[in-house]
Length: 364
Image (tube, rainbow, N blue to C red; front, side, top):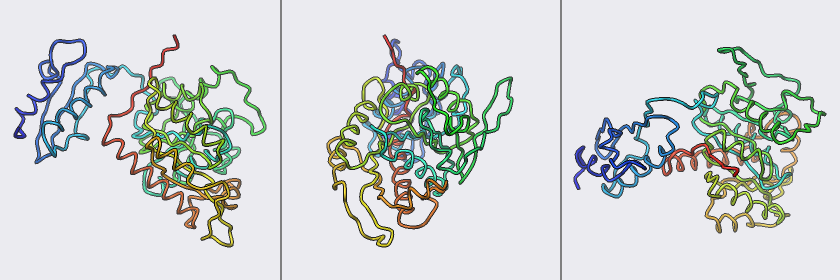
């Protein structure tokens, strides 16, 4: 079929809005079709931004048109218009991509990866925020050299709005800004999830290309709160090469891929992949084994987006509040490679799939 406005309407007439007898063209949802070579753009109009079928209809439009017209460029050219905005405005409304950094267990260097990934993306020229969602063990404040700093607060429409702390080109927020370092957070689940929502939704993040979220280790209430409160673009799962850590990687994969959550996994990150002595920066000693995470990556068809070595300077720099990614040495280069690979995979994910929706989980 020849590409034309009429042919596009005819193709989209095959799509019926769920629960209605009329197709999406007959209901007036398809508007402003424009054709420029093989590039096709149009607007899909929905009654409310809480319509549960927005992502499904958008994907159907892409699939039907790509099947009908070979070489058509439509994936990023569909504008979603809503007649009534019912979703509460939050500080995340101007954030383009939300990327979680998760791990199946503690002690694998997840926070180190999150911090340096954020710094790396900022060095690549993107506007980046970093949220420390590890409520019970916040480490961002110390790793960024911000001990004793307290975020500002301003009043807006009778509501307190948190102002993220800024350093190394990042906008930062953590529960660690509001508690003493030696103070244990003995909170029950509802208190922890309430605190998380406040530091995630209340700050004025502004316009961001990326918000990196340092998730707590394991699987639990905080993870469910995150996916129920924000549209997570995707997650990175961090592991070390030890077998006990790798077993928990599979648990994390299964959690995010479960039918009730269904958040895309962008890739796996292998921390402590090899040991490199400071005096022999080009030498690699695989003291925990080699290619173990790659086997899981192959089995689950998930790319390994970065491998970070064991180097004494990583721990020392983190303790001093100086993220290794700001340097141009071998370690800094590894973190920059991680940032670049992550960006490329996020772009690929956004071209191939519709935006992730906030997860609705029934407890009954």
